Length: 335
Image 1: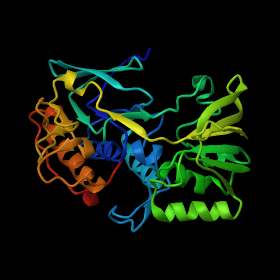
Image 2: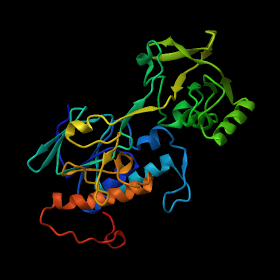
Image 3: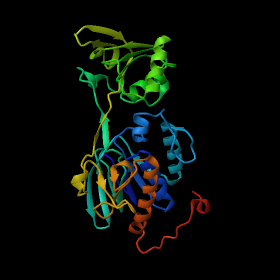
Image 4: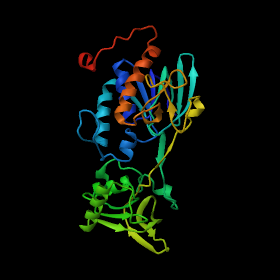
């Protein structure tokens, strides 16, 4: 059970927009606690496509999603954010001078304002329906890659047909001892250029394509995987000796208990005032992909601007009666 905390702003969501909101609040001398359902910061940028290049971040003609998160963490670091990871915001109660936020990890946080920066909402992996799956999770079955080096000289089974499965197969081919790529059909949902790279690696013997097959069973003891069985549509089985299974079947987004907090939700999005990010509940704001208003562009850079607008709108709630004299960062600098 975590202790009770007190801060200025609670940010729900540690994706790129949530991390930039830490910086924007920090520049206005507001302290932040950040809550995210994933085990690490970065949201989908980290969980789904850390090595995918992004081309529309100002000042970066090209930057990998994972590298962008590292830069945003570095930018937020001088303001000493407190992270509550691998847990969700479960309850938000209004209090006399703000809110009390409770998390699934047992933390309670008193704050003056809340910023919901949850992207498409909290999300978790779509798991394959395999017997004894939980026994291997976190030991030899993983739904995201934290460090490529963890798979050096390992025999991997990668399953899926989307960008995550294809991109990680390509990325890990140079490190792994062997990769089996399992997919139920010979058509992929991934980017065509990535699929071309996958086939070239298969042609060079770096990856063995196991198509059309689906995951069927696990073999091993005490969470240590020894083999993965797969089956085709006719029920014909094949056993693949392996150290690790990486099933990439996408994620299931969920808004979670937002509506329970009194926040209006419209078609899985939160309507906001585009000039401030304010929701229908005074003191609760939403920014990034989860926030909606007429003619909104769903871009990371749009979310960055929304984070700045929300921070400025929150300032009078944290410092009532204190005038905000806006100064450019080039003049003000950072701690």
